[in-house]
Image (cartoon, rainbow, N blue to C red; front, top):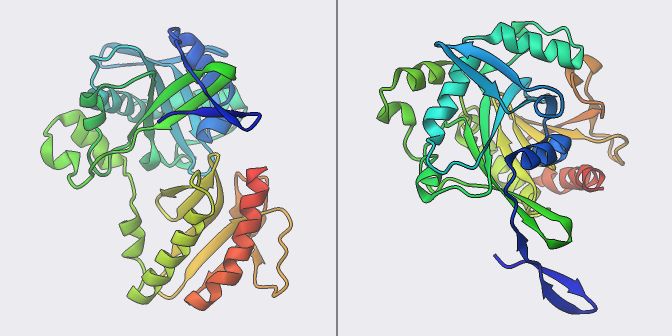
Length: 313
C-alpha cells in the first residue's frame, strides 16, 4: 500500500524509514500503549521488565499490559528474529503466566497500586501480542487457526514522524489448533484460555434477533473503517482506538446494547444509565438500550454515532 501526503493539492510519497532498535520500538509502544492497543501499561522497559521462572527457565516479559475492559493480562513481545515460532513462544508465555498467577497479581498490585486477587482477573481472556518490523509468510500462516490467543502486529516508520501499527489478519480460521496439535502446553493452555467469536454470541439468541444483530453491526462498522469488532466472553465490543463506543450482549429475547457516552442527546428517553457497580473500570458512563426490532436501529444508531464522535475526538 502506497502512502501519500497532500501538499498544496499535490500528493507526495511518504517514504518508509529504517528502524533497527528493538528497544526503541518497545519504548514508543509502551509510551502510547492505551492509544495503540487500548491497554493499561503495567511493566516493561519504562520501569523494569517483569519475569517469572517456569520449568527451569526465566521468562522475561518485554511489556506487560492489562485490558481493563476484559480484566485480563496481555503479554507483548518485540521480535527481530524471523526464525522464532509464534505458536511455540506464544503458548509458552501463556503457560508461564497461568502457572504463576500469583506473581502476575503481585506485579500489577505493586505497579498500579491495586488490590486485585486471582478471582478478579479473567484468565480466560489472556493473550499474547508479537510486534515486529516484519513477519515471514510462515509466521503469518501460523496464526490461521480459530480460537488462537496470539496476535501479530507489524510496525512501520515513515518520514514526517508517521508510525503505523498494522494488525496481521489470519487468512483462514476454520481449524482449531487443539484438534491438530497434541502438544501438552497447547492443550493445557487451551483448557483455560478461550478466544470468542461472533458465532458464540449468535448462538445465544433467536434467528430473528440474529438478523437484527447483523444489521446493527453492519451499520456500526460502516461508521469508520478503524472501528474494530471484538467478541469477548459476554459481549461483542465495537472499539475505536482500543475503547468501546458500543457493545452488544445477546439474550434469547433481546439484544442489550451498551453505549459509552458522557451526556447523550436522547429525546425519546430510551437510554437507561448503568449502575456505578456495573461500570467497573470505565470513567465514562454506560447507557443501556434494549433492542428487539430492526425498526429501532435508526434511532439507536443516532445514539451510537454520538459515542463515535466523542471517541473520535
